[in-house]
Image 1 (cartoon, rainbow, N blue to C red):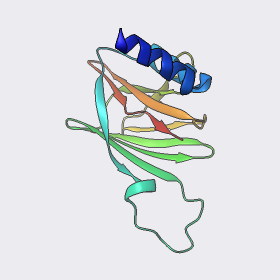
Image 2: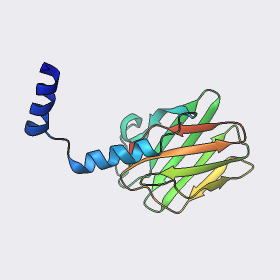
Image 3: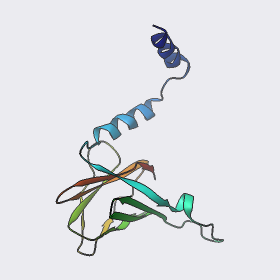
Image 4: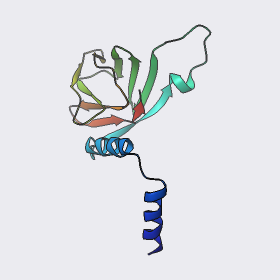
Length: 139
């Protein structure tokens, strides 16, 4: 009873913004229960040393899931990245309702996407045997 009263009070005094609710629903719709999560191990916005005169530099991200590493450069024109160890795979950029357009990974593990992420995004990597999804980040 008290919990319900507190929930109602919070809904009136501090409601969840509609945009946040929509983003949460879209992210949940893209959730893959069988996927492994790739942990963010490097983000140039947080971890890089400041360099004088380096304005507008692309954002560099590194994700790791076990022995698999995904390095990504985020630019205004899209994504450039590499999967290590290299192998046959596809990558999707998730960021709205529905799945992103799949991008092939070449024999050296490299991939590019001409669709720059806007707002929250994640990457879904599909190999022949598993699915790996990165943490969600804001572009």
